[in-house]
Image 1 (cartoon, rainbow over the protein chains, first blue to last red):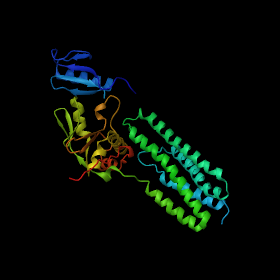
Image 2: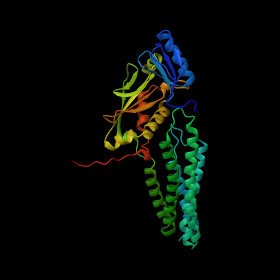
Image 3: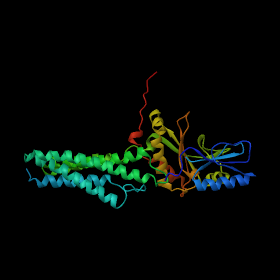
Image 4: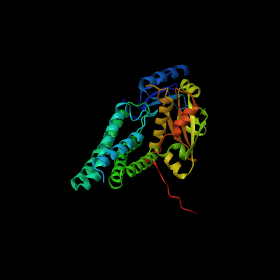
Length: 63
Length: 290
């Protein structure tokens, strides 16, 4: 079941307004708990893997 | 000299027995039981019959009969194509796909085993034809045992030491021992992996094994068979629980991480050891003495 192109960033979830931009949908979170929750929802919905870039930003990638 | 029926019956019996002997349903449930099993037994019967009639037909100066063997070869090539097609079609709905190499390997084995059935039937029927019933029985039995020896090909456990290993995280990176597996962002998933995940390390015994384990086809087959052996805690939406087999580039050691339903580490180790070494993944790198 192919739902999205592979190895592209499907979404970005971040605490930092200044750190991200560009083509993928960006979700801003107010704190770590909210970031974690949004990322979990998106991961389950998109069947995508959550990766921590360790600068306050999570990306969701379909592998 | 017996009538033609003696050799034919002997060949048919030995050939069919060969196919049945090579046909085993195990925990991997492939061939599928009962219908896949019946299909292959029936094809084995056809193969055995073709092998069995060849020599009696030639003895009766029916030379056209030999052309049927060519027809058989064509037929069994189609067995391979059909087997490949049906497995490839199922790949999309497998939680852990077998991978193209494994699919090709299975298809090849099914084709080859029909030839084996044909060959043992040929041996048994010609021995019966020329030397009598007891020689046919003896030779047929020997051929069956020889063919049976081909049932178990080389397995991963033969070329690598398979041992349990600890899962750990370095920040968001998951390691099995010191083999990096993947980056897991979600804290909850990391905790779940540490609680329920199991790690296995495969240490190749030589350079050839190292090159073989490095192929993507072989690693995918290991992941598939490991999941078949111990089950899988994974559903749509949890890609981080996909079993992964990753390589340590410096040592050639290979790490597997899986989240099984059966936590028994010995079942997992055995499942990994029994993964067939795929023909199309076997590598034999050149070793030049210094």
